[in-house]
Image (cartoon, rainbow, N blue to C red):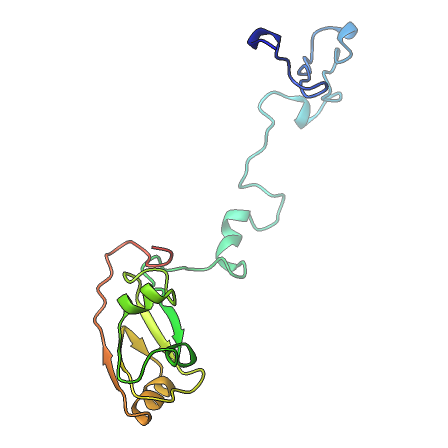
Amino acid sequence: MKLHELLPAEGSKKNRKRVGRGNASGQGTYAGRGRKGQHARAGSGGHIYREGGNLPFVRKLPFVRGVGFVSIFKTHYTPVNLDQLAAFKAGSEVTPDVLAEVGFVKSAKLPVAVLGRGELPHALTVKAHRFSKSAQQKIEAAGGTVEVLPFEKKRGHSAKGR
């Protein structure tokens, strides 16, 4: 097979409809527009803002459920639970870098939030950007320490997926 022998699949290509080219073409006389009226005239595409008395779509948007204001500056934290932290040895230091190496978070650059699901059987030094109250209480009850890391997000960039 050579390049000049290639053809598109049978039935995949179709000639466009050429309207208003005489009655023999099958779309002559009124060219598919009917007789008289607004839609038979040129430029009758309609106005997107006019909806025949209904509230125009553009004005509806603020009220549509779920389409409201979404902040582009929101910080998305990567959650890590206490039952995951129980896998570390007693007395070890848990940081976002360590969590990324183990695979509990995708990247050490993302902010980490420690949540209180599960129990912590031994003391750990946990460093993260945010802690839930229950997680902080359980870590301290096990004899561990909690350190909140600062997180400075670059303006205009979401931390989600980066």
